[in-house]
Length: 570
Image 1 (cartoon, one colour):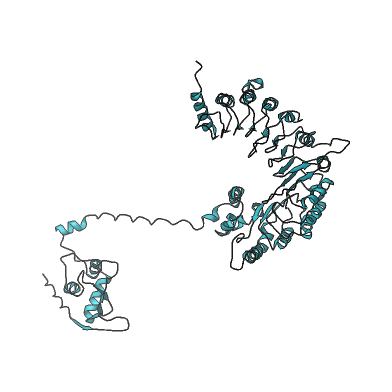
Image 2 (cartoon, one colour):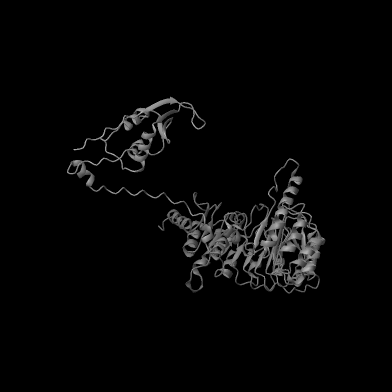
């Protein structure tokens, strides 16, 4: 048997070494060329050796950088560097194994049997969680995005949602820039109503200029299909804003100016000519000259459909233009008082208005002291409003509206659906019975904050319910002075509707009346669709039930409480 050649002893020498690549405290171990050559050969070729096959090189490896000493080894061409700090992420045992050649044990031994056994496959490494796909927004079709954005715009408006959605990705920017989504817009300077260092006027002017500069780039591409525009708190740049609207919004149909100043006749005329479909104008709570409004109405002419005004000293000139048949196709006219109510009575000739606006469908004179002019000595009746569906004359307690004035207004109006006479204490049930409308659905006769000096009617409520019991959906009798028996007869009509069908009544306001528990329980039982019932300040009801009930559950609970509070038949 050949004798195994003894390995040469591991020759080494150590000395401190400092170079540009190694910091202080680095120990360099210089190896002999033959030893370094054999170490590199082992690293390149042989598989790792077993735990018993330890050489002098392995011993010195552990002596120079033992585990837990705070040092690690770095092998170079002909040296080993002992460096401070933790080593690479690979364990030292693996590096040591990679340097030692594999020594195969003799055949037939236990070690050979152990080596021959198949090793289990390593467990698969779980894949890291995938991050969200940054391009998911581009995969949504443009048509689907337009439908989603359209639903959101219908609820909250296009701003600021579309402006923020345009920053998500290119596809969303393309969808948010579609003019079809920008059909209804409200524009208000961001600093409107806030105090600033230079004063509210200076701060508002700067905010308007900044917003106007942004709109000059935005409106030509996105506002081409704009139909409804609302401007709020524009004080100094309203002319420039309306000029930009006239250049970029040819399909504009509705314009609202709220708390805007400086509207000139040239501005409105320019807007009327540039927007041929403009037919609705709301200038409530804005300072607009009467000459500007008259010029606008004359320019728009027959295409004007809806007009909202605030009563002031200049309203008379505007109404004069309407009485002169300037807008024969007008359908909605609303005149209301501003924040500071005007105590000057509004004199309105009824017959002249019926001739000037024969197509009127909605007439609202709200919170005004309306004084109808007499019809004249001859007393020729006017043509009436044949298409009128809503009449609102709600106002203060000192209203001059009487049965005679109401009859003149509603002459020839069989299609009336809503009649609001809150505060009109001079109206009587007999005058309402003689009205030509037969399909009334909403009747409001509430008296709020009335003086005790007024003499209220104590009888006549059955005249109202007998005439409209089959069509009434909302009835307001709050503050009326009808007696208990009169109210019982009036409300008993809903329990015996024609054809034994349920009454259509869904809202009943009896606040401050003399209604009794038996009458209320009878009404609730006869009207299963009742959703609102106001019993506040009803002196004939027991305590704990004098409140407003909203929803079918609360109304049903009120019925149960009333039935338990009623005295027994004995």
